[in-house]
Structures are given as C-alpha cells and as structure tokens.
Amino acid sequence: MSLLELDDVSVTYRIASGEVPAVRGVSLTLDSGAALGVAGESGSGKSTLAMALLRLLPRDARVGGRILLDGDDVLTMKWGRIRAVRWAEASIVFQGAQHGLNPVRRIGDQIAEPLLVHGLAKPEGARRRVAELLEQVGLPAWRARSYPHELSGGQRQRVMIAMALACSPRLIIADEPTTALDVMVQAQVLTLIKDLVAEHGISLIMISHDLSVLADVCDRLAVMYAGRVVEHGPSGEVFHDARHPYSRALAAAFPTVGDPASRMAPKGLGGDPPDPMQLPGGCAFHPRCPVALDGCASLDVELWPAGQDRTAACVHVRAEEEVS
Ligand SMILES: Nc1ncnc2c1ncn2[C@@H]1O[C@H](COP(=O)(O)OP(=O)(O)OP(=O)(O)O)[C@@H](O)[C@H]1O
Image (cartoon, rainbow, N blue to C red; front, side):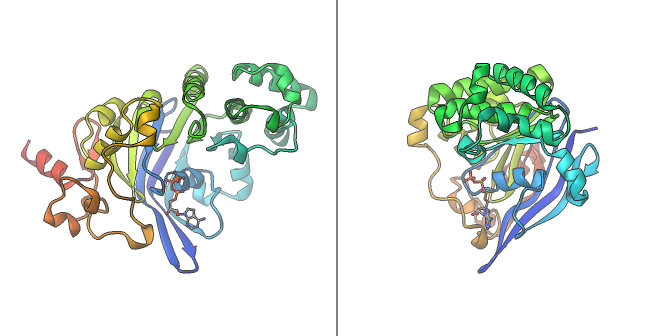
C-alpha cells in the first residue's frame, strides 16, 4: 500500500472578492521510502497542497477530495489524531528557516519540543537526542545553546531539518528548503536531505520551482500549473524529456542544479502565471504555450498516459499517444 494517496484533492480559499481555486483535482501517490518532487512557478499551488497534507491551512481554505496517510483520511481525522500525526508521522521543513524558528528560544529547546510534546522523551533523553540530531545535520552539539540569529541561513535550515527528523517521522515534506540559500550552501543542504532520507528510509515530498533541484533528489516528479498536475512521471524522464510544453519550459528555465545564471534570467518561460481567480478557458497554459492550437482555448485535456508510468495533460500528447 502507498504511504500517501491523494485522491482528487482541491483547495479553494474564500476571500472578500470571491474564491481562489489554488489546487484543482490533484491525484498522486507516494510509496514508502520514495521521493516525490512537486514543481511549478510561484502561485501554482505547491505550498497550499503541502499545507493541506497536514491540515495546516488557514480557516478560509476549503479542502476537498481525500488525503490518505496509511489508508487513514487526514481530512476527516479528529483533531487529536492530526496532532499526533504532525511531527511524529509527518513533518514539514518550510521555505526559509526564519519562518519556522522562534527568535527568542534556544535552538536545542526548539528541537526538543516535538519530542517532549509527543511524550517521546523526558528532558534528559531529549537533550541527548538533540545532540545526536545536531550531529546528524552537521552541526556541533554546543549549538543547542545558540539562538537562531547566531546561525547562518544554511545552519538555520539544518536546524529545521533536525526538528523535522526529531520524532523519526516516516514522511518529510520539504517546501523550497534551499531557496533562500546561496548556491554552495544550497548544494550542501540538498545533499544532506538526500542522504538523511535514504539512510533513515524516510519518504520525501520536496517542493520547488526549480526542476533541476527536484530531478537531483527525487524519484518522481509532478509538475503543477495553475493548481493542477500537468505532468507526472519518473524524474529523469520528466526533466530531460518532458512531454508537456510547460514542463519543457520549466526544465529549460533551470537547466543545472543551483545555476545562478538561470536563477537570474530563467529562459523559455515568457509571460506570467495566470491569476487563479481569472483562469483562462480550456488549458490554463494555452496563452503562454508555444505550441498551442486553436482548440486549446476551449479544450481542457485531462492527464493522459504519456509512456511507461507517465502522464501529461496536453492535447499534443493525447494525439501522439492515440496514433502510436
Ligand atoms: N491564505 C490565502 N488566502 C487566499 N489566497 C491564497 C492564500 N494562500 C495562497 N493563496 C493563493 O493560492 C494560490 C496558490 O498559492 P501557493 O502559495 O500554494 O502557491 P506556490 O506554488 O506554493 O507559490 P510560492 O512558490 O510562491 O509559494 C496563489 O494564487 C495564492 O495567491
């Protein structure tokens, strides 16, 4: 059985001026020990999806579909069960560690907190576990006494990873874990994540706008556009031989892991992502698509088989697969 199964998940934010359909009908599965990358530009719904997995969305968000963690639907779990799941079964490493760390509490106390809250250790045991976790993420044990501002961005992100590992969860969700870091540090943190999940057999969902980063770390990739998955498949194939024109543009925009040049001037992605409140008719990508046909403005193609274990939502893919 899959560790995680998303079945037709949708998230709509209710705001004063109307409804924002941030995630639209996403279905994905994650096997135990596997790593899934979720790619897409800013606003494509990646973070909303990640937050939905642990019911961390604000109250104005309405979530539909099913999110099965070990067969148990997160969306209908009682609050007590959800709190037990967070940290202990699944934890999130957020974008830019400043969001996740309390500036006025020592690092060690913050890493120990989930252990104490979940009753997994007494204070003395928690101190030992904190030292062990700091070592696992490449920081000296004495850093437990430091405050977040005494650490560099890369060190703070290592602390966030230590916190995420504290209760030995089976799933870690890493939302743009290296985006705020410079290129060298980014590579170190990515290697750390890769090694830790492999060593501990943890399943990983990693979110990034940078397809090259995800292809480096993950077994499979899902590419999101305007709240939908538009391509899904083995990461090497999606990165090097994308079938959806949007995935091709995203791969061309970030050709090499952490390439600073591509970061400053992403190639191949003209125009802006659509406003979710005013999505274009038909395929939402058609106004930016270099190979759009007249019909794409009215025809919204579902994900279509696009080779072994792959799907893509594009009229061209459907036509090619139908003749082959
Ligand atoms: N609390 C909220 N209320 C209303 N709309 C929201 C809220 N949070 C996100 N959105 C909207 O939902 C859409 C998806 O946002 P989301 O943050 O999930 O995208 P993302 O792909 O993670 O982007 P980024 O990489 O910039 O975080 C966007 O249009 C965003 O403006």
